[in-house]
Length: 255
Image (cartoon, rainbow, N blue to C red):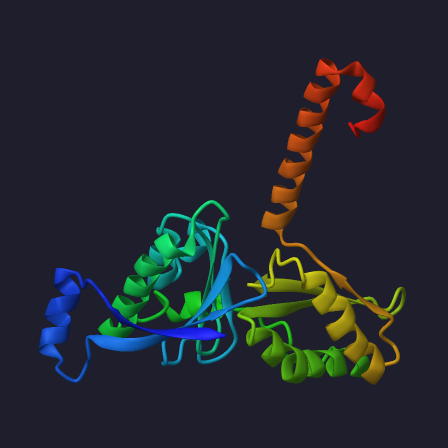
């Protein structure tokens, strides 16, 4: 399900000047939005190419410095990550800010960027390093690994991108467990249905076509590991406080 909005950006004086000198550029464009399985992520489709090849994800302002658009989107209150796909931008927000408040500024930012003719990245080096080359088949890859990468790139990735996300291949334990390690990105990161996506979708398909694959394991990024660690510390702190208030509850609290 998606809605279409004709976004009209509040252009800066620099952008206005650039547009006045280049009449071929238009000031308005149609930006579609599509919902994703993650309520805190929306897929914005500007109607023009975003990433010519691959994808890119920005989880903090430091990584977003490589892209003028990403750093502006990260500056919108409530936005916590930005993901570029071939023809869309997925923006994820925190749960405290409503889309009705966040969306107008996102529309304006996207509109201004794509009508100004600005590059998506500051340099070709930034562009090359932003997106993973995870499914590129290498000479050192075994036949099994090459098949895994091909399936992920041709069958899995397009389907996941429909929901505004992506996957990143992190390895295959060929000599041991037979597990394929994957990282979910974009709208799939932190989504409640991500486990279902991995197990009922990706895992079944890989095991069906490649007998050597025994399962799929989700790998968390460094930021997710830190966030999970902080959450666990908070829960333990809360549990200790509750135990002090009511010692009888100690048997029910995990410290």
